[in-house]
Amino acid sequence: MSEGSSPAAAEGPPQEWCAARYAAQCGFVSALGDTILGWLAPQPGERVLDLGCGDGAFTEKIAASGAVVVGVDASADMVAAARHRGLDARLAEGHTLD
Image (cartoon, rainbow, N blue to C red):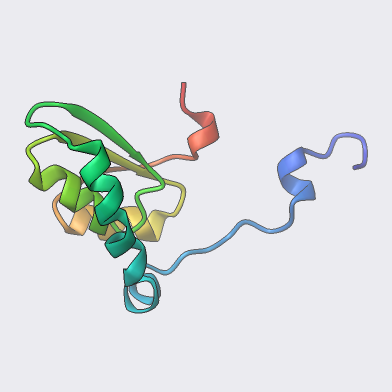
């Protein structure tokens, strides 16, 4: 890595996610989360952070339990799709959260 370059720059160009393509080709991801949802067993009023919420399909399942859920994703298109579902979704990179 050259002087003055950041580690992120050394990793290559940023990834770009398309919510419509993700929904069409990766719906199985949310379905696989059903087992995790059982383990999580979110309760009404419980606060949950869904880091890497994507299009919000799984976040929506968490919210249906009555939990107060916030979705975070680094892709503006994914956050827009999650917000379209009526979710509290925020644009941020996970490693920048404090």
